[in-house]
Image (tube, rainbow, N blue to C red):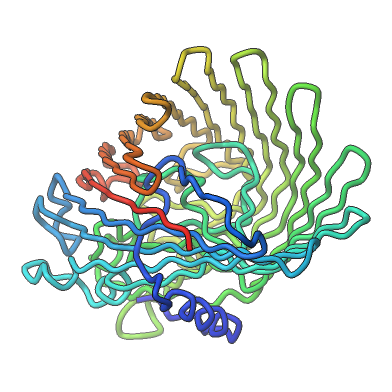
Length: 461
């Protein structure tokens, strides 16, 4: 099990404030990110200085295959009955300053009523009841164009739909893999954003504090990323990251037919990597994980030509940890090696058809000074396609996504159908299919195909 992170006093204050908000008579439950858009018809209130919106969601999901002996669930059966709540409060201190507080609460009784499934203690503790602080910030706009925003916030930089080139500020929710778009996976980061416009350029500087890592599924869950290591009997420990601050800068401008942004930063890799393997220090061998420090510089641009939208992204990442092949894994006793990588994205969208949007994206990762012990080859090419079709005045939406994984490691297919029944009620259907070769990092998740039904009620106080 990973060592728990020491709770900061700021997080205590945030959780107290959010709990007070959620425990008002308006308490209810929902999940963000399943529907492709948020379609809420909100009437004007008497006062524009304060508003509260939110939604309640109830979902039921069914695992179509047997995940295998590495996981708690071994049969094709119901694997989720999640109820959840999202609440967001916005207010103004003045015409120049405002604040936002939002949070999500999850409850899934499947970890209580499915007694025939030997769920781990970690699953029950983390997934049965879960509270997340989302946005918790205030901002200020000065007359001279200077803008500042401080607190938990999402900064969605970059243009790629499938890989993160210049979009490195926020961590991801990885409790489930490839069941949502990247824009729905970002989690807020505690940060200070300062922006200033210099002629046609907007300069954004960001400093994060108490930076976190990607949130991953607990031990025993069907998306447990460390299930294979647990199976061979190693103790897994997460070492405390020494430097919890990160820095980013972005320069962006508008061109005649599009936008251009240049980004640089120094940050902790949001994915854990092996720091060292200890086979002598204790009776039980252990694998110690940490976050590697990485630097990045890159650029992203898009432009419009009639019904076509073209976009591209290019970046150089320095000191990226590379995963060894399974046969070489335990030879890396001093931790995973570090390499420099070049990432590139080329994408296109076409909206020339009525109510239909088509998109294609090709992603590339080149690793310099490649070594034979590495799991991935020196050049990795992946592909993503998508269609988005709407009908009934955009109240009915069908979205299909197909991702071809790099190195012929397999693919992930996703189909979602959403229907806006009324201004307050949305209905949804989701189907996800996983296919992976034995060499793929997705191989242990190949039997996690799922179908899900969901209902969401939107409200305003």
